[in-house]
Amino acid sequence: MKPIPYGRQHITDEDIAAVVETLKSDFLTQGPKIDEFERKFADYVGAPYAVAVNNATSGLHIAAKALGVGPGTKVIVTPLTFAASANCIRYCGGDVTFCDIDPDTYLMDAAKLEQILDSHPAGTFSGIVIVDFAGYPHNLEQYREIADRHGLWIIEDACHAPGAWYTDSKGERQLTGNCRFADCTIFSFHPVKHIATGEGGMVTTANPELLERLRLYRTHGITKDGAKLEKNDGGWYYEMQDLGFNYRITDFQAALGISQLSRAEAGLVRRQEIARRYDEAFKGNDKIKTPYRCDDVRHAFHLYVIQVLDRKALYDALRANGIMAQVHYVPLHLMPYYRALGNAPGQLPVVENYYEHCLSLPMYPTLTDEEQEYVIKQVLQHV
Image (cartoon, rainbow, N blue to C red; front, side, top):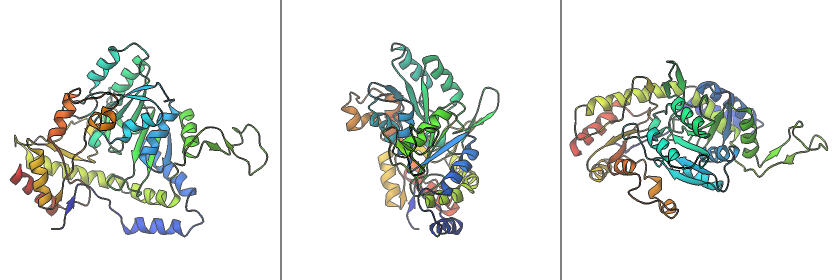
């Protein structure tokens, strides 16, 4: 059997045709497919607005800048994430405080978040960056209530969780990224994610003022909108009104995203099937902790993470047998860069314990039943 990765893209003939059609059109960069992709993605997650960018890191950066992060701004961030979720604050000159995770969901622990906020003077912190780790969504209604009491904004990193939902206090399903409770939500279109454009990302928001800032920062801080210009010398005229970036996605990437989006739901259904097979195979095995499940939450299962006693031994055994299991993630506060800023081992015991035992098994829609059975067999044999 050929090597089995932990995640991979799925490119169809329809995807290729969509890209080729755009490559033959008049637009390669800033064309009509970007607007179309933004509209369709906003509809998919139930958000009023969406802004496409060249990758999710860029989306996090302009979201932080749009929310006013700068030197002296203090933001609380989960340590269980890829570096970009915290780096976006540092790019703007802000300071990061890490909050430990819940031992079951692996999300930022709401009680510990409140402890951090209550132990500092009012106004110390400006916002929080939460991450829907592995595809399990935060209950944003709960975090919004905390944020409002302390005057905070919320950036939701939902790169793992398009299509996920939770049930609010009224019994209504809230789709990840609808921005009913978050100020900005960021999604990734990296190849191993649910929707792939090679590289790419999307920022959703319900705030028209944030929307305008996001669009401005995406394109060098430049606008040609006549209503916003300080003067207008003619049809060619534009103004750089702030220091922005070149974070634009291409038209042919957007075409691929539109095509991928059309089967996003089918991919989620398949991920649920794979997760259920893993759950059943490992049920009752006291050597394996499987992902937390809840009836009123839809887990998007970007990752299927187990915990085992000897993670290194299982990792090596799976790799030796062609299964490219992976570890997500080394806690950010343990990285040399963040240790140099005052963080240290032992300060976040839950995430540090999680890291010692976690392993992500193969999880992607084109994983075959035969391949999954092989993975299960190898895990049970070597755990």
